[in-house]
Image 1 (cartoon, rainbow, N blue to C red):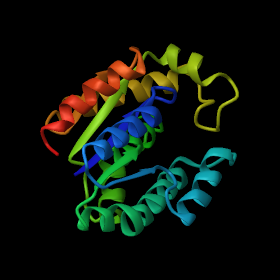
Image 2 (image 1 turned 60 degrees about the vertical axis):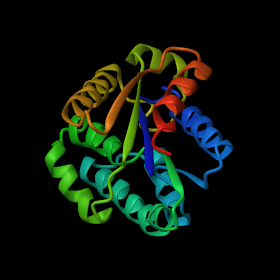
Image 3 (image 1 turned 120 degrees about the horizontal axis):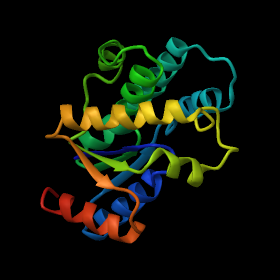
Image 4 (image 1 turned 180 degrees about the vertical axis):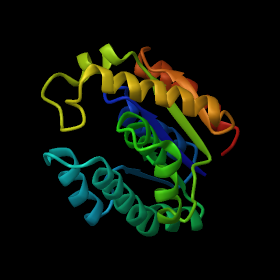
Length: 198
């Protein structure tokens, strides 16, 4: 099973990914956790470029994310799934669709077409979208975040709207979760939704 977490910066994705992985391990399953961009030596170098670099054009940004994602699927996600492990990933394809496809104005379909060959068309089985208000995202991240976290309010709102649209478009895969509640309550709800599929 391949599970991803999505949402605005500061929505609690990383926390929930770790809590879910821990709960699945406690249930006796092999779990691999990873993140985007990153998760491989190449991916971590691309992450540094993407999050600390300046003046990256939208298509260059989208292509760098796709390159890091291709490596992650090839080196980590694919092999783990093939041996029967559960993979839990902090961000994946939907991030590019929301951030580059919508907020950067490249187009969801065009960004999808860039990514599908890169990932061998490997899509998540379940995606949990942690929803928080864009203003709450700013409060949680602060003003000294990385290059993408420092984007303005309009950008954040476009990303939040894009995620909602993706959840409506792919309801069989993307499940929205209220990210404003205490982390333990959210974790309990998410594990409850996943447990029957393990």
